[in-house]
Image 1 (cartoon, rainbow, N blue to C red):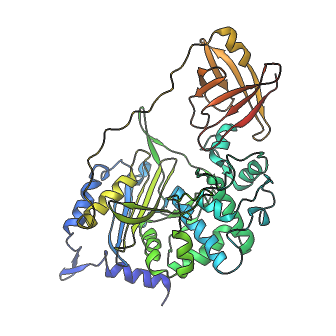
Image 2: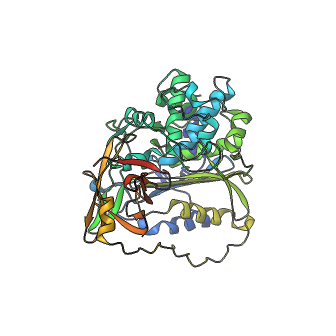
Length: 476
């Protein structure tokens, strides 16, 4: 019996079973109270002209409920259906890590190998960066999206693997020594995907299809590394703008950290594999679930491409994803063999919160009581200080980064500093103290101006959460 037929029978035997109600007529089975409660969570998006969500719940190896709300392509009024394919962003990381773990279990690589063994183009930073560290986000590698933003790229540009690889090759420093800290880095998973391709001897999408998706019966899942590829039944993403709904354009042509295309039902099959271990077996399953341990001995929640955590007293495995207007979340409760998948094509959607609310409906009696929501902690803003024009003049100039091959011009405007790049809106630099500024862009955060022995400003050093102390030399 083929995998496709087996999957079809599974679906027919669970959520899509039709019950005869008279000659020539059929009707869907009556929904349970739990399923009606799930529908109620998504009611505000269940209407024409609205992006929405696809939801699947798997329990004890069977799809308990699969439903969809809103539209996959608002321009054409095409509704979301269980077979609608979504870009699921960072949920992709579980699959990339799984591929590396499979190769390790087969003896084709070792998780503690230096990444330069497989990708010698990665710069020699004077220390070993292992595949294991890449999978736990402890490598110290700067994040590719933050680097691209700093380099003048927009995230709706067409971004390809060769472009990202060239960016990695030009890096001259790490954020921190490997395995001394945890900082989320998409770069590591791009390198893991390329390692799979080189060790596996096939392009990453094909290797994953043959070794992961097809063996699991995930027939509507693919790696999308060609931004021009036509995919039937796909959703497009949206965001709310000042004057209403807008398209949220996504043109990635690079995979590993992102770019998995799949359905909620297929992701339910994936979550179920954490219990059945149908593909990969116990060895790979153990690798995936094992949390990272820093050099200090501190254990982190991030395991190998998956977050190993708890929710209301129950163990969970899961991950979220966000690119353009796509928002996604999967959460699995291994002790109860229950998994929840929520995929959306609206940027303001909260799939993680809704996935947990679904879990509350199904597993509430097994959970610790919900804690009262605490008032949100206000962000402590750095207070800007006034700096005279004479002082600001010292910072004015052009600053160039060899690592990004790009230049920012720092200018005085309206009594303050701005950083100007031809591909970005002007970035306001707020003075926090002598030579220290905060910036207004997501990729351009704390900014420190460094001085030479003569006391003249010579370097602009930028940090942005996932990038630390990237240097721009003053060239004029």
